[in-house]
Image (cartoon, rainbow, N blue to C red; front, side, top):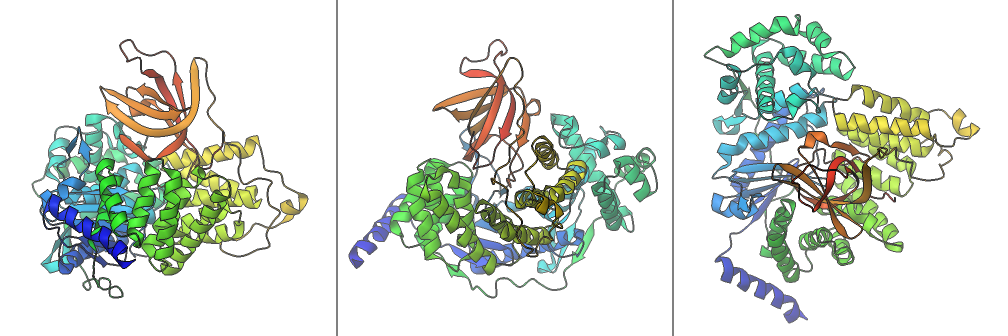
Length: 627
């Protein structure tokens, strides 16, 4: 028995040596909010963790309590050289994109990958995207210009004095140069939302980013109480104030009167920056000492990274070899489960997923990611397997919540798991905890409204949804709330006199359970099909950007249904879900999204025959949706 278990590992090590020479040793360290692994020493990995945690601490000043925002687990991959990093870079036209680092936000975790050799040149990209995550977690309904302005402002973060301090808000030369030539009225800048042309079109988008940075930089560095005033302005917008009126009331002059001051500022030769001094160096992972990863476990994590950036062929070889070499390792089994699900080999995915959860009952990352994976794909299961997976996901997320009581995403997913099991009170307590930890996450509030509806309290959910629909700067969240309100108006849930007389529940408390509605699903208010249009249900497998068109590939009735548009802005993108993924870009969709796609059958001359028509709408549906 021992010989059979050791032999795969021996063959695995020999195959690595034959193909790549001596493989580097991978080590993992833990910090407050991150798992950092790399082919570097534990001290180097601690330094990387410290820089990212200190950046998170600086952004914490924007929150009401001044504390760093808790987020989903963040995995950080650190490569010592750009050559070692190359197999883990996203591809464009079949070639690795030359990046020193990148940030990726997924449903189950956040991922940062970087090379210590090239990170200095691309750190701004990572810090910009990480800023969006942190600000969105802490601050609710932030205006689009301020969201992008803060992300650009903090993207220039650089440690100094051996990690005891940091430079913040350094000038960005390309923005200054552009704005000395092109400028848009401040009133237009303040009015931009996610659907505006200024936010979505080529050169005008560049001007929008530059001017958002410039206004934020001026307010943060030139006004004595700039940060406080910015928070005051953001609060006014979140309260429903008109942007121009809120600006005038907060900063003491109209946007038109303020504009010459900003333009004069940009013509200057010097720009201030803040020097932030940390009270003390952050202590990293005292409870969990550094650990050297076995080669197979390291390859499982690396294969999972390749899977996330759609290098699936390389990921498959790496993960399958790792799972054979270390069948009793939770990381290899979880990676194998995720691989099989991405390949639509669903029946082969459940055994390794269950093995991963069983093998690491005290590992927060495994329990959290395993529970989320099960919930993402549970709709592919059939019969008793679906209920079994729902139970395992619920148990895994309950363990994860016990292991880390400060992870808002864990409690949000636990609320969803409880909702699927119709455990309404438990779901209400979990989502209340998630909102308490991350008050800026509007999707958590929408889930809370859903739970109130399913508990039999639509009268409680209605004002919650109205608040999101009228005040949220996030167009997708606002539209999601409006559609729920329309559904309540069109087909109100049945309520008995007893339910109507029951006082509204307090989220987080445990009131007597109200009579439950007849079903855990309420009707979606889908877009109506117009004359000359067709609609199909399927799974969005990829969005392809080629030949001046955006192609949507939907697997429907066993075929690849392809519809196209000249640009994203012409397509009505609607979500009926609380997915963590709030953007849609070019590339494969892993896992595929259940959608309704609607298209016009007429199409411009010269378009290939494989394109069915001009896409007009893509409606993203819940994972458990049944047509």
